[in-house]
Length: 114
Image (cartoon, rainbow, N blue to C red; front, top):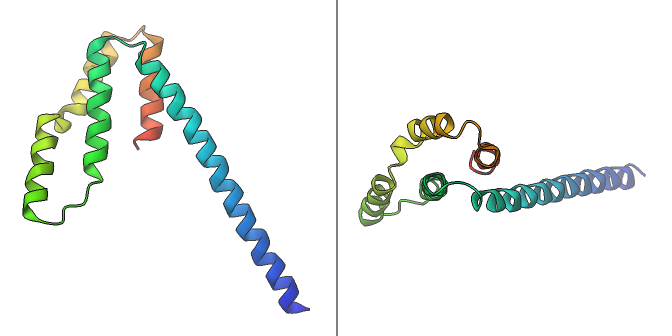
């Protein structure tokens, strides 16, 4: 009897975890979809900023498995000026403080690229 109760408790936890992660996944898809739609509505320099942000986020998660790869990643990070993202974001926020598409896209990007 204890085994059956333990089994159902574990099964319940497993399903709860699965459905919670599936719900989180669905929400992420909605955020991603909205983010992509908003990016088409922002000015050119803001689009370039979001492209850089995406690239920097991707590169920061890349595995450095040898010196050549490390050099390649460092070169790409420098090319995208990843170290300037924060200061560029501040400048764009000032420039587009009345642009709701930019502000919402930035908000969505923070969710996606945290």
